[in-house]
Length: 395
Image 1 (cartoon, one colour):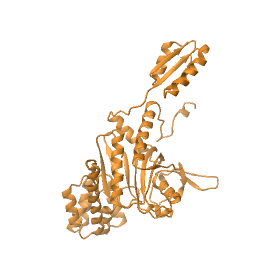
Image 2 (spheres, one colour):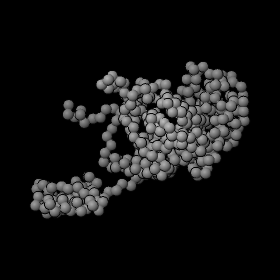
Image 3 (tube, one colour):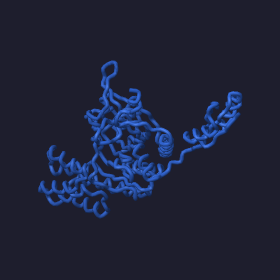
């Protein structure tokens, strides 16, 4: 029975020793970067009322939520997603603000994934939200911040795929797809089954322009020539054309930030979050099959909380980023300046005073009373296991 108490539930894990130290350093680096961009820190509760993440808002499905009740019988959930919580806070505390609000956060999210998916059910996310600005300039600022966050973390090779929800929605509207048919297409795109997408397109007998636009859903990196061609084909489809023009303008502004080489236009990108209204994006690198960053524009989400305000944001999945850094052998420098002072009973006062003095010099110090049955070598080995660089004996 006692051994069973040592195990964590499926989908969660302990983070300790040097991995925990690296995680804290990484989070501190990224938080500092967000401050440099003018984003102010905010903390939201780990659990909220169920309605904050309801189906109408378009976040995580109810079956994937951790639900429980308070004393009054209200349904509560562990937050699966930070953005609706931030939206609630902005409506509450910045309801009358007419200028943009920049907020950053760090916290854990909880999603009750199916066990066979092998995903963690608790993840740490660090991100930013820019509220009250519907411009393409705001889109570019967020994407530039994403790129610089990943570079600050130490990554050198990564790619951010950017799409626009209206490219896909415009195609569905123009083709007049029924809901059941659309779900089939969504599944094909989500599974990257682009051969299946081609067969799907063939079966619909679409006009030439629309057919060619549909075929672009499988494009992972749209070139300038492809974008120009897509705009020509979308001349009679204003929703699609406007989305393409937004993406084109976005890439032009990103060149001013000198980050465009990390960005690729992926017109077939979809998101499980239905509150997105404009650009959406996901970032990938070697060593992880899951996105290390994701985000997008959500211009209607704050309406649910009583403050109409266009918004855009992103979240870095710290656990996935750490895994990628480890697999790419990218070190996160951790300050190891830790000292172990081992003292005899007679020298306890002297050892405590020594520790106080050294700590005032910003040194990390641990105290250990010398046990008679232990040798100097025992304490040296102990210090090594605890990642202490020096052992000082006072006897």
